[in-house]
Image (cartoon, rainbow, N blue to C red; front, side, top):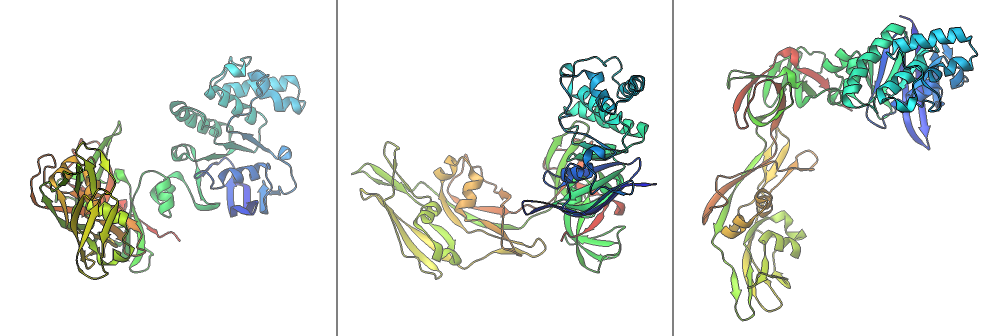
Length: 521
């Protein structure tokens, strides 16, 4: 196959910002090539450089072996279909398509032959005298394509030209555009951020990120064998799992080893593992590759999207001491006040503030008519030593309550396999505080001072689940266990089976469904 376009080490800089970072790419005759990536990745800039609308800061563009460095856009054998088509509103369909041929001063009979052929090719026979403003978006796009193709360029550039269409019409035009390209035998370079468009139409996909090419391949190669996590997530839904390549054909994650078809990695190399949702199959519990619990089910029309938790996160269980209401009433001034004792980490003592003490103790004051009263002072003398310290809250009118602050050594649960830690403390609360809570999970996290973090860089991790077995609407005094957990391993699955949340299931996948990728960077 003959090479048509050669992009050699192209760099583009705007105002000292490097937009393209040494791009090299070969495109061959009759190929449908898609530049795929998010906004700002440089794909449109590259397209415009190929078309001659921008000059590269460094590097060379060759078309059919000729250096385009000093060739302006109008002299290149290239036509462009822009995102908003740029049709001439004062010209009808025929004259829009014939515009370039008229500029070249071709004979009228030749122009007529070429225009009518293009109208037939794009399915607009009988529309030649239609007013452009009276045409739908899909019809206008067909006119723009016909106007570009009628000049018989070697190369057609399309800059997100389907993005203005509605979903159904866009799908229809994807197939038509590929069919047109195959019929006219012209090389197409198409820019999009839509993965479905790229997979549907392309012979070759160029995945771009931050001004660089991440991967080049056929749609099948890009989908089934992405080179890294970025490409895997950008093309289709993916389950990405941290793992270790123990040896050739053997990968490990979540303390289990699995056979795979991958090889060529270093022994015990840290890797990313990709398993597509459609490659995971539901089985009976203990009959599959691993077990899981259904966390959510979403009906997507032709299938259900199921999220299953296959391993639990890091957890910490504490005791919640529930007391009866212990409001203190100051009848002389018509005020009430309440607060709860709490436990805190020794390491947090030095940064303790009045506001934090009020929040941890859930301290509040109010009138007998239920109007809020400000806490005018907070008195405590907590030392950076393990022990129990008194803390007093009061109002301007002398209403007071004293509680205990229990300072303890840090007692975090560390999960080396998940590389995370979690901490929480026993705490005190009242029946009314629980029953009146409008966001109980959030309040429990706050009362227990629960927190989780990454063991590697100490960045915070979200508390994903709060479990308890009491009825918050009918709770009584007593001690209750509360468990705080980070998010466990969750896998997305596509299935036609109607499952229910909470079901305990088995999951299976084959060695060929496990794709191992090197870590980015």
